[in-house]
Image (cartoon, rainbow, N blue to C red; front, side, top):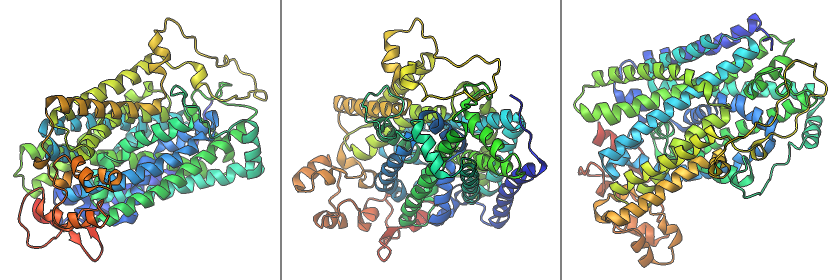
Length: 618
């Protein structure tokens, strides 16, 4: 395929994105130069408001994987991807009501601090190492995949764009810290939305109107959304997306350092929850834009599929190729789309670098050297940002063997994020689980998820479970490329057509449920954790939702954890047991320091803030 070249205005628009992103880093480096503490650098002083944090969360997880991969998925497999609309809703509700309150009220900086408070240091360190590996792998996919697709379609220099992405992200992360990351993400979110909007408008115009797009999509079976087949081997059905997608994205959102770090940087718990719910609107908007972009792209290529005809060499190149076609006579707009794709990349990589630096500093450096000065801590934090920027950029090379963008990215999250979700669930939901159960459960979950994922990589699922919907090449100019056919499956073990063929969206569920089951069993065998030894702040009494009619059963399910003291007992009797009272925070504070008032709770706003943590932690 001959790449279509950018015009000068395309490069101008694209360069502007990098300049503005770098400029934001410089701005915050100058603005915050008198607040040189690791706390200010890593969590923005814990005084962020919900608006920019919501935009930042959306931008970070709606990366180039979404901009390039989701339209391609819809083009080939149909619009069932829109069912993620439901999965996102479940994920945000569970994150804001189950996981966030525990992390926020604990006053922690790294989510893995929680594991030490609830279990012990070995569990914390094991989880931290897994998170670091997962994030570096995922970031490699995010950097490499869009650079490769854009290189082969637009002629954009592959390694130039890879290293430009790594250098710019590392630059503004190292200079400006979390505030630079959040505000740059907010700007990049706007760029992503504008990029999608131009594609939707111009693409539907080329198709003769949106009604034509829907008609063509219906005729091509792209609008057959709800498939209620319960077969777990089917790649995308209603159940794989809602159930598997919820587990996968909950591992990304609910317990992921990158998400929680920005939530706990908010000035109150109420702001943190608002950031998550407003972020949900952003996720829905970007999802709808990506799905409709895929339908418009199918309408455009319905008689000549550039993938099966050999015009492009990978499905991830479909969207850039489509953009170069519809904007062929409009210089600057292809550059806007490339800026849109790279906005997703920049935001994701920057958030990953900042989160990696935070967990490494909090979980390793600070544990080994607890008495570092503020100035030295800040310089170490900046050095860690630089180190992980280099690692994430160089890891992009390995991403070339991981296959499609969306599947590769979600597979990585499923393999590591599922067991991590199971580990935190053991700590927060099951009071009787001990550290042996937690560690054993984590290892079990990792083994199960890696087993199924690596098996699927070695023995791909049968074509009948994963083959795309029909694609036509009737009106293509004939080339010498051989038509794509079903792969030949030879010498496959029996397990390859069952266990290894499970939908990639279930990897996270396998790891999570395996971790929980093993953790519960091991804890019952080795001796249950005494509830009296657990701070109530570390447990969410979810049993109250299911045993609301009986105080006796609720107390039994608490396993000895003292959730019935002070204001909390009053809340239980008033039917609002889900919310912990201010006295509980005071009496069961993690540092066990005596405070005269309740500095973490604002009764007027009915929300927790970070005042208590400033006193006890810094």
